[in-house]
Image (cartoon, rainbow, N blue to C red; front, side):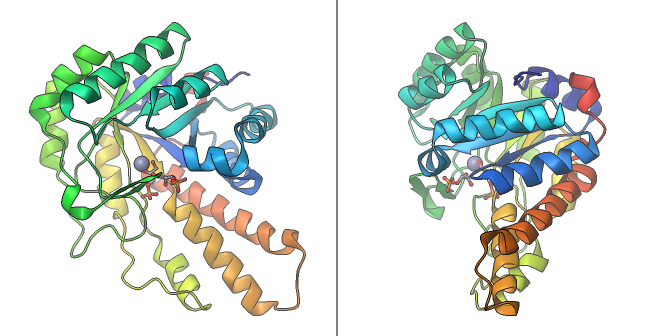
Length: 313
Ligand code: G3H
Ligand code: 13P
Ligand code: ZN
């Protein structure tokens, strides 16, 4: 089957109180790990590509890897641009076959964010592609934009109706206390569910997106640190908070850092245990297997989207 948009995925996820996993992909092993877990759990999927990933692996390679995953699994898969920051980048992904793009105008003033988002929406909708926008700024690294803690800002619920109405955007990422990367909270993890609730009230039935949603799986942080790495104080979003968000208006949950930690931890451990090995398949194979189990846990125990693929076919 061809790539799909996220429209039907979000309709079903909203009604069923679950969320779709949006996992970042950078190479073949990551694509295979995610899609094999989703195949075994019969889960619909969003595979997302950042501009950094596109520079690293090239558009055409990622497109063909995802085409291969479609052929191999028969799953409904949406291919999404993560954190597009210009019209030109979004256009290039739309022209190149993506079925969904994010235009992240969150660092612009409100009116400019509306203008830029609407420009992308107009072009995308003419080409059958859906668009995610963002209001509020997450701390952390968003591609080339490094948002310092002091510049982070929660979403203002009083702005969401105007933003969605004026832009026609299909889903909205909001900032409620998550951030990108492996160091999300200085103290106890806390998310502003009151903001999510207020947004949900103002936009009934409308799909909300949560970025920065890795749980920073302790097993892999420990594996990294036990094998020569140094990640003091890593802390992510607790799984019960993600389950709560998924049962509310959040229909798309973005996960990248957990896959990076899984891959790095596994490879560090492998080299420590097998310093004489140099065949990449020897260490990439176990890394792929562990990413697959991380993804399976998300699909089944956190997002609740296992056995939902048939709903959107
Ligand atoms: O939110 C950002 C994603 O984790 C992608 O990161 O820009 O390093 O590919 P990247
Ligand atoms: P994490 O860094 O928490 O995995 O977030 C990823 C993300 O939001 C990609 O857009
Ligand atoms: Zn993000």
